[in-house]
Image (tube, rainbow, N blue to C red; front, side, top):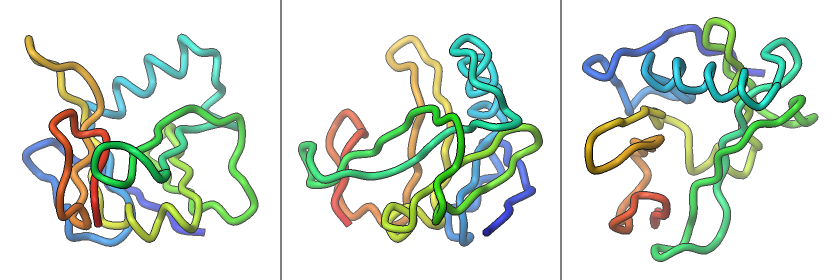
Length: 127
């Protein structure tokens, strides 16, 4: 089980590091959404993954889960846990999860060093 303790600011992102990184902006948004959905940070967390499909071949998957699965890698960021299954970790290690809120776009942004091509919406990629 891996544990990540560093919290990044958007200016301090290091996508080449192993593991998963989450910016402070993303952590704030995750906390708000978890409270709204009634997900306990003690037992549950945010699940990041990939699945086949999308414009570029692979799509990002982000949702809340009530508990980690047996083979998940678990990353701890203060009071927030992030779960990643072993298959998804092959494509997501070294990535940074950020949250962007502008007049044109609002949502999570996957900054993935393994992405060789992505679609315009940013929710799918090729590796």
